[in-house]
Length: 139
Image (cartoon, rainbow, N blue to C red; front, side, top):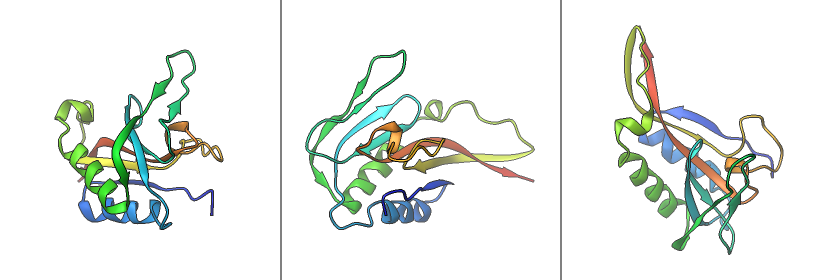
């Protein structure tokens, strides 16, 4: 299926692992390059060359090749390590709620508007975006 959409907001490793299991469900899916996108966070791409993310009214972004093609487990470990290395500043301002907040993540594989074929971060070659967010726990 070409138009599978994934959007998960959570704060635990089990959900993170399951998201990667879904996104890398084809045996041939391998992440070959990456970038940190200002809006979408860490983005992993497939393909034999660097991927370009076209930005209206801004300079296009170009991915960096990974040292080797990464399968689901290697890509998941790379992304989890990147997420864990973020500082509180990377998560944005803490929400002021009647409850508590904890470091979490948002994982998705397309644009929020659901444009078909756009891929993660609006690039056809995008596999997954991993963005640090605050997970909120209301009373």
